[in-house]
Length: 246
Image (cartoon, rainbow, N blue to C red; front, top):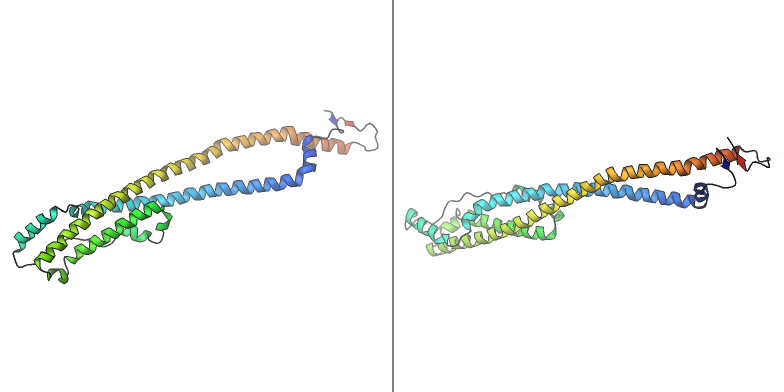
């Protein structure tokens, strides 16, 4: 194979002219690519860590709402008052016994990190839990001495107020569940797109990069190495050293 020492390969000429700049640019691109991949993996992890709490909140609110719906129809207040009047007689306080769940385990555990959720979801979730907390307190008051010592008209007013609050709680629960479900769907789509992007990078980008590297080595580096080796071996005092045949 003949190597023409008078015609320096383009790769060597380019490297001599821009070698330092290309090295800096390559290092910058490698750093950027590494950080993009790391950020993508981190972001997928963040989305995943948000997905589980959102599902937990959705389940807790739905579970609470099933029992809270018993207090969501203001027209039922008169039925309860009539039943209490019949069962308890004219002198006993109209204090229905209600089993109350005093802790919201999921929400209580997320109070320190709820700011990771979108603002519109936070608004609806917090509104629901504030209202349901008020309903819980109202139901607990049925057991208190302060309620049992109220006059019958005032007890009636309190009972009707509980039903009105219950209706507001269910409205807030429905809005919170709708917002959480939309967030769940968004997270599923985003996670899927993230995994698809990584898969495409792995199954498309890597083969393309390998093919480009092989082409560069075959068409650029190997001829440049042969030129450098052949021309360096050619005697400098030989007037005919313009071409070297290994």
